[in-house]
Every structure is written in structure tokens, then in C-alpha cells.
Amino acid sequence: MKTRVIAGLLLVPLLILIILGGTPLYVGEAIIISMALHEFYKAFEEKDIKPLYYIGYIFSIYLLIKNYLKLPIAYTYTIIFILFLISIIPILKVKRNIIDVIVTFFGLFYIGVLIDFIVLTMDDFARGNIYVWLIFIIAFVTDIFAYFAGYLFGKHKLIPKVSPKKTIEGSVGGILGSTLVCLAFGYFFNIDLKVIVFLGFFGSIIAQFGDLFASSIKRYVGIKDYGKLIPGHGGVLDRFDSVILVAPFVYSVINLFIK
Image 1 (cartoon, one colour):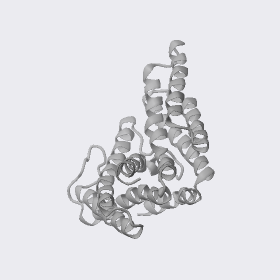
Image 2 (image 1 turned 90 degrees about the vertical axis):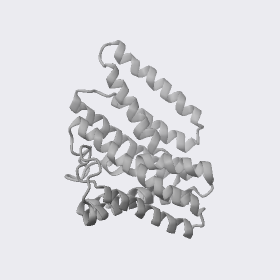
Image 3 (image 1 turned 180 degrees about the vertical axis):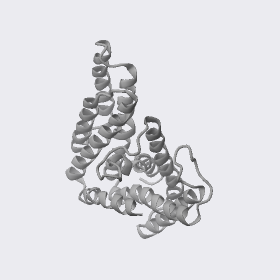
Image 4 (image 1 turned 30 degrees about the horizontal axis):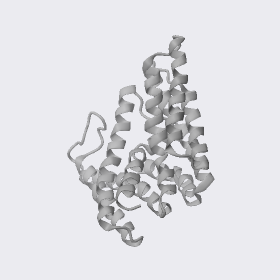
């Protein structure tokens, strides 16, 4: 419980940035992505994999510029292609191998591209400043309700080999909690309730997928936490593991069914 309270406090600056929007949000996102990429790449060093950190940092700066200048998606494809060409050079010089590059670019997609959907949700829709909160409501409410449901009723393990503490009862509690809170949010802000229920229900499942996926990576590389932002409570990536997959999901549903 203490861990979740501290984790929640860590996200207060981000929520302030979302309220402010614009340049403060773009800068904050670039910093968060840079820190998360650093943690992700460092984790794989435990397996003697050596990602190209500078590629991740360059991409983070690009996202800041892209969002500030409102550049079209075609620029993102171009910059990724250019960064890929640059990453080939160390391979040709036999200073890096193909696995180093694969992990580097997977990090760009998994962290950089997917987290950026927070800003895209904010900027691409007329009511984006409202819709963006659904990303965090789904991710955080799922985590809170899953914790309490698991604590009170948990008996059957969900996927013990990946996350031994998570239970089926906790998972169901997270889904119900997310759906109900999203329903209240949608009612208050006059959003199509059928879409809201869809978002709350399936968004919670996706949030849990994100959590479990991040845990599977940690288990693979043999670490407990991605970082030490707060000793004993993990790093940036530990706090964003569920948000990473929820952000593009919320964006996609709104783009298809609401706008």
C-alpha cells in the first residue's frame, strides 16, 4: 500500500504537466521517455546486451521537436530510418551486434512511440484535454482495484511464473473498477457511454497486459525494478508499465469511434 501511495505521488508532476499542456507537457514527456529508455537499456546490460543509448536520446529530442512544431507522422518514419542507418555503422565496425540494435529499436517503439500517444491524445482531438485523463484513470484505477481485490479475495494465481503476487480475483477487480470509474467519468463529461464501457473494460485488460509484459522483461534480465528513482519502489518505467499500452489503445478507440 505504501508503495502505491509513493508511486502515486511520483505521478503528480506529470498530471500537472497534462493540465498545463503545450510546451511544458512536450518537455516533460521527452524527459520521461529519456529516463525510461535509459532504464530499459540498462536492464538489458544484465544479459550482456549493449543497446545504443544515444539513439534513444536522439529520438526523445525528436519527439519534443515533433510535438512542438506539430510535424506529421511521416517525419517520424524518416527519423527512425535515419537512426537505423546510423545504428548499422557500429555493426559494420564490429563494435556492436544485431541484438544490440534490435533491443535499441524495440525500446524506441515500446517506450518512445507508445508513450507519445499521451501527447497525441491531448493534441489530436477537440476534447483531447478531457480524453487524455482516461489513459491514467484506466491504468491507475486498474492497479488500485486489482491490489485491493487481490488483497481481500485473491486465492487463484494469475500467471505466477511472471508475477507471483497477481491473482485472478485481483484482475477481475481491476477490470470492474476501471469500467465503473470510466462510466462515471463518461457520464459526467457526456461521452458516449457504450464507448466508455468498452474503454474501461478492455483498457483494464490491456493495462494488465502492460504490467505483466514489463514484469516478464524484468524476469528475463533478472532484475527486480527497472530503476532506483525511489529506493525500493522502482524507476520511471516501473511506474509507466501499464500506461504504455493503454495510451495507444485509448487514442485508437477515440479516433475510430468518437473524435
